[in-house]
Image (tube, rainbow, N blue to C red):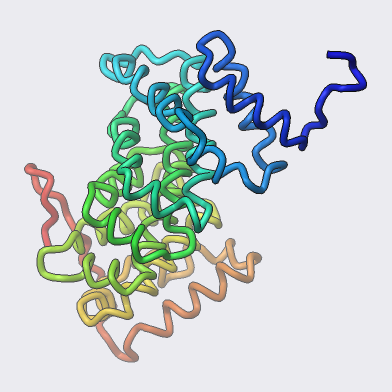
Length: 296
């Protein structure tokens, strides 16, 4: 094709060509890279990805083909980058209000959970986990009830709590953001705080992140953590527990050097205002038993 006829980067002809290239094994890798780089240029990309013949099957094929590299951990950076290009396209679909529901109904997120089960801390795995969390985060970003219910019925919370404990800073932040968005939906709050919900597991994970001596949370992560506590105070069980068992580091000025960030300062002040005047300030930490259950 003469240079004068080369499609512009936002030309629908280029998008159509890239979607067709996804079906060609020889061209698929390049098409994935180009679609990821140009995804912001095409407002209809989510629709076209979801409804174009064979496209979702081609993307799921890329997800499944790296399963053998997860255990034992042999995932290369090149393979991780390629599948993360797919995940970026799934995030586009999950973000769009008109494709989010069919994406959920097709149970596409279930194909991604094996990535969140990995514990290897090499760069390819950290990159894979973080990008996978981005897809889950896109589902709950607007506190969509259908997405919330779907994720509550799967293993999302337990996986997020695990990453909040062992992940790097970016992965911890996105995992905590997902937990926060689930809690901000009333369905999610009641699920997490009911008798059989993961209430104490959540309390333990939040406590460990703010109390860790190895690494202090960033301002962004701290804000997510504090907002989780604020939301838990909206439930009678959370209010009853945290009015006397809020981590002492959130009360004693440990994070005063974060107060240059007005949003963090506001959240901390709101949290301290939730504590009852004159309530005992004796923090009893949540502990983990040998069987991984949490001591109330």
